[in-house]
Amino acid sequence: MSAITQIAEEKGISKEIVLDTVATAIAAAYRKDFGQKEQLVTATIDPKTEKVRIFIVHKIVEEVEDPIREVSLEDAKKTDPEAQIDGEIREEVFPPAEYGRVAAQTAKQVILQRLREAERDVIFQEYKSKEGEIISGTIQRIEGDVVMVDIGKASGILFPSEQSRSDHYYVGQRVKVYVVEVQTSGKDPQVVVSRAHPEMIRKLFETEVPEITGGTVEIKAIAREAGVRSKVAVISHQESIDPVGSLVGRRGVRVQAVMAEIGDEKIDIVLWDPDPKLFITNALAPAKVREVEIKEAERMAKIRVDSDQLSLAIGKAGQNVRLASKLTGYQIEVDKEGMPPIVLEETKPEISETEIGSTNTDSYNVVITETDQLVGSNQEDQEPKVDAQSESAGDSATETEENTENPES
Image (tube, rainbow, N blue to C red; front, side, top):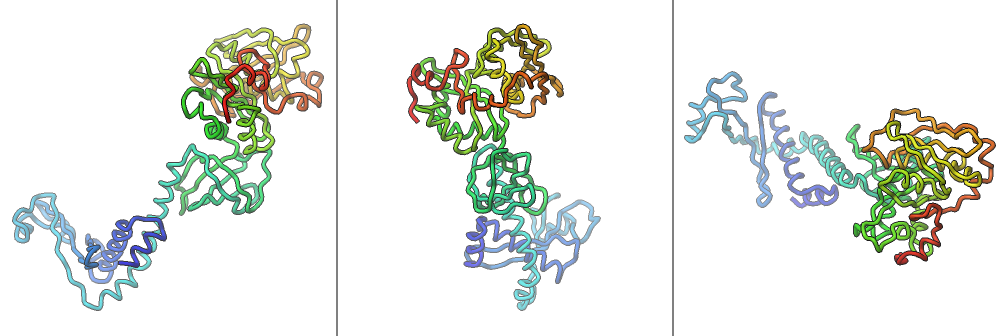
């Protein structure tokens, strides 16, 4: 019994599961050596006395069709006067004294197989409960474009699509990853992890911003191009709390802690608003928008900016307006007086009203036209590393801090 206890501790499996596994293996071994293939054989192990008992089980039926597995009610009552139809009769059998050693060899492979299955189930359940959470791990090995991460009892799989563009991986590197899903395909549970998922941004902010966990500040939407830039829309449920300032933190300490986990990725923190015009205006920060025209039926917004704000509104290679589109759920057309509009050409079906603010980074695949003469090669340098904006579009993080209650880090 001490061996069973040791196995249970080593495998992280309950003692009851190990006992049941051994009993099942003993029953299978008896059926193979002494019984018939179709017989139903069970075994029990008393955890106190360690006594093993083996039984052949018959189902009680009115008319016997399978004598190996069934018994008539009349015959069953000879053994148990209280026997009933659909019940069971267990007949204890006593193998030869030397059977214990033979059974141990026969049952060994069955026991090992069942223990592996039980261990896999324990691992699956453990990591299934961690879906949607961030865990720490160590880069175990790199197989082509796929990175394997040691996350404890299992290996996390970091597919190319889940890798951040700014990350550079090496064996032994400590990383934080977001658990996307746990699959059961193959022999072992497959834990799919991510460094690029939009929800990773949310979870990182939750660890840094007590106002989020306390419920006074809420992240309403996230749009992300991992390793490059993200936009986060926030709202406060308490009038005295500035949601943007809460995420930025005093002297930017909170947002900098998040950025330290995601590399060179920039983060724009903007104010969410139920009015789509105001939300789109905020989402295009750091650019200052003059006017927003909404075509609700088409889920389209036409915005106008001054000439000195045009390249900021569009962003390098259309990144700013593309992220704003993902964040708000509107296809955005940028217009400047005297020039043709800069159009976002949507290549996927329109999203429904319920999908506004979706964290899906693939909501839109857009093409920016006529941007070569509008977006200079130095636009990336013109944009701040962290853009924080409150009710007035384009307010800086510093200005936000001065006008809020200065949440502590």
